[in-house]
Image 1 (cartoon, rainbow, N blue to C red):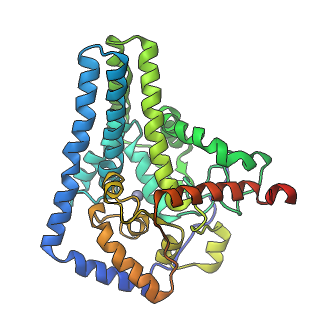
Image 2: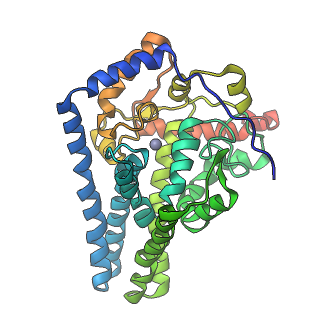
Image 3: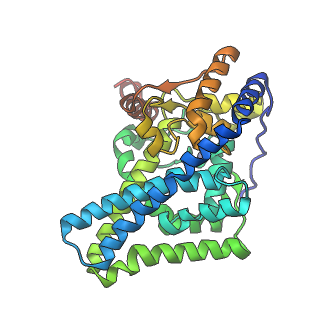
Length: 367
Ligand SMILES: [Zn+2]
């Protein structure tokens, strides 16, 4: 077994984050502001739950025709996506409640309703991705070799020249992979990226096993009492693919675009950049003036603010964005916000195409 590489260290201070943090703390000091943010956050939970429970009950309490079943599955996909973006993400970051235990309990919705372990997610997302954003080998979201290449530091392969086309089916399959084998493989490896993942014990182990069992029970076992097995399997695969595509694309639009920088671990070791500046420059916001998208994505279109303040409820991000943007201008930090979803998707597509061709013979690279 290979020894883990030496740890990466950042400069955790700097004038930019000091000034930004002071202004954000002043904004959040008002009890009225905190209360309004909490109400807006908590109001989403019953909506997400209703959009999950109601269509599921309609599906399994009586056998439905194809049109109603498709409508129920689509609504279920919306409910699950809202759970993923607006409940489990905040809770697993510790932004939902003050109590760590209650946050973990609510974060368990990812085990029960989405089929992936919240225990593993907290290492994969909170540690590997949030600490080492866009660093090859350390950020597991960013390191998808040998299937995809997101940065010049990753080696070129001939098949990457088509990655801007074949990446979309892979996004569809990512959810299925994590539900079926991803968590188990990560526990067996004992690490995600270069971050240690301890095998769960005690209540954590109970949570992982009970979550997997509950997910299989509601997604596959119970529906098979009502519908033929092939219809259940087809419904589950479609549901999983749709939610996976939405989640993968949302996260990729923030980090895997032309405007987001990336770094190799050697570069970080040599430069020891300010961590907050690194986070802002490896992340991009999109559609900041679209209240519907902001509501549905749980503020993940404000990922710069999320990366700087992951323990603050996402309902505060639009206001915090004004503070961050102002301080970026003051301190010369590059701050990028795509005005539209179309611009963000285009940038992702072009970035994939460029990275896929970089380093190949010149007639391909420039083609
Ligand atoms: Zn996050």
